[in-house]
Every structure is written in C-alpha cells, then in structure tokens.
Image (cartoon, rainbow, N blue to C red; front, side, top):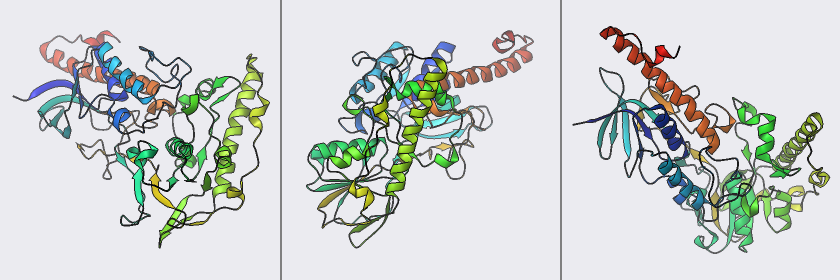
Length: 429
C-alpha cells in the first residue's frame, strides 16, 4: 500500500529542518526525506578547516544556540552539523535518512503529488523542495580534461595534503576561493588567485560584525537582488577568528593575484586585464559600508568607538600594477587548478510545473504556480537573508502559514459538502 501524508519535505539540511519545525508547531503531518545524513553538505562537501562565515549569535535558529562556540565566534563545520542534529532532536523532526527522492509528479485525477523514493512511493498533498542551490559543482569548460594538471572543484577540496606537488591556481575569489587560497598559501604552496568582480565587506567595524551592520541598515530584508550585481561574489571569512579579507595582505605574503580566467590553450591560461578594476571596485564596496556605518552612528547617537585605521588602504602590489595576463602552468610549476566557481541547481527530479523548461524554479517567496509545490533555501527566495540559517527559519514560517491556509480552504470545501461550514481557516477570520 502506498503511504500517504500531508507534506513531504525533500532535504534534511537547514531549510528542511526549519520547515519541519514550523510544520510541527502548526500540527501539519509531514516527513523529511534526506538521501544521506542530516546536514550532509557540512560533513562531506566542505574542506576540513571550514568555519561558518557568520558569528554564532547571529546565524542560527532562535530556538537553539551553538553549544560550544561563543556568541561572537565562528563555529567549525563539525559543530554546525552537530547543531542541526540537535535541532532535529529538539523539534522531534520526522527525518528519514538514506532515502533518495527520484521523482515528484502530479497525482493524476486528484490533489497532490506522487513522490517516488528509493524506499517506495508516497502520496503527498504538498511537497517542499528544500535541497538548496548547491547540487552540481560548476567547472567552466576552459581547461580540457586531458590537460597535464589536476582539476578540482572546491566541493572536493579537503586540505593541502590532498593535492599533488606544485603550485595551485585558484579560480574564484569569493568566500570559498579566498579561504582555500589562504590555507594553501599558509601551507607553503605557491598560489595564484584569479579575482573577478566581488564585494568585500569589513568583517567588523567599530567593534561590530558586518552581520550586525547589515541588520541595522535593513539590508537583510532587501527583497530582490540588484541585476547589476547578480554575478558579484562576496569575499568574507570567519577563518582566523574572523578577519576582513584583504587581497593586498595576501599578495604581501607571496600570493600572486590575477584577473578573471579567460581562455586556455597550449598549456597556458590567459587572464582578463581586469584585476585592478576588480580590486578597486571591492575597495569601493568596503569603504561604502564604513561610510554607511559612520552615518548611522552619527544619526542615531550610537556609542561605538571610532576606527580611523580601517580606512587605510595600502598601495597596490606589483601583481596588480603589472598584472600577469598569461601563465604557462607547467613552467610556473602549477600542479592543480582549483575551481571555486560555484554550483548549479538540479531539480531534474521535480517533474511539475514548478520548474521551467530549463529546470529553473518558478516561485514567489517559495510558493510555486503548481499548487502545493514549494521551495526552500534558495538564494533570494524572499530576501537577502534567505540563504542563511536565520533566514531559512523566517522563510519556513511564511511557507508553513501558506500550507496551513491552503489546507483550510480544502477543509472548508469538505465541511460545506457535509453541511458544517466552520473550519480552522474560517474561524480565524
């Protein structure tokens, strides 16, 4: 017999657990299906030394604090995984691990969906896709597979000892690429870092973390991404106890900065002549945050110490003023090209009208045009905070309310047919 349940949540990470907690509080019967383990990405798809990019006081669920890391610290990945296990226990989340969802289709002739899994089919009125945006690592098709160099995505990087001898070209200078390049440099490797357009906020300013400043600015509630910055990464790090990313400091320690990787042929990588422009734009973003913070302090009379030294930006290093535009990888002794170039979404298992012809989710605040089909954990799902732990909690609250309201309409129709028009939905009006 096919199992039936009100709601199936696909994915047992931060988004799925947040959704489960809110559905439990609302009394909605549901199950969370996770193909591996709770918070699997934190366990096996991150490098060994990774810590969270947000401080423990800020990026968490309101129901539970991080037990080991202090409020201003940055929990290591093992503690983050353990944190989500603790969340699942504290909320009695009905998680089934080791269960893979292979397809979701509309249930023919009735409301709801058929969820095919590795352990059989489930009929569900609602399906929440909470697998997030990081399913398929992207490696740009620049360097051929048979090139005499190891190509590795950041998802598969663990530590410097994993790599073959020689230098490393890291392509991508967002949070992951910058932190990995820094670790490789500290291990004694020669490192080249390919830097594209980026934002470079201060880790902290005037004694307050950048997450606090974004909060008082109202930036976490920004509803849509500016199209002009759609491809701009953010260089921020919780490593070393939380420090501001400074590419000039990395260069002073021996790292070679280069522009965006452009083309490859005959063993050589060529880079766009955009390094100085990208560095300058990152500086401008950094200084703009300081300007806004100073204006906020002056306008509101907040007692925070001045920090004039934060505005001191050193001269450009030689690799910026006289950039490397072509690099013979073998001659430079480079044994690895490490791609920190992000991920693509993969909703190929979701065979409903919630995705377009290209497989991209269609939704408004996580509510798709396919009745009963929802999304959680996508960047900018409802606002800037959506892809963060605390943002997932708030998005889940909204979607849980939507699911309860949708059930209220169904209950009302059923009660009308039975001659009893009062339901949960009508009683709350």
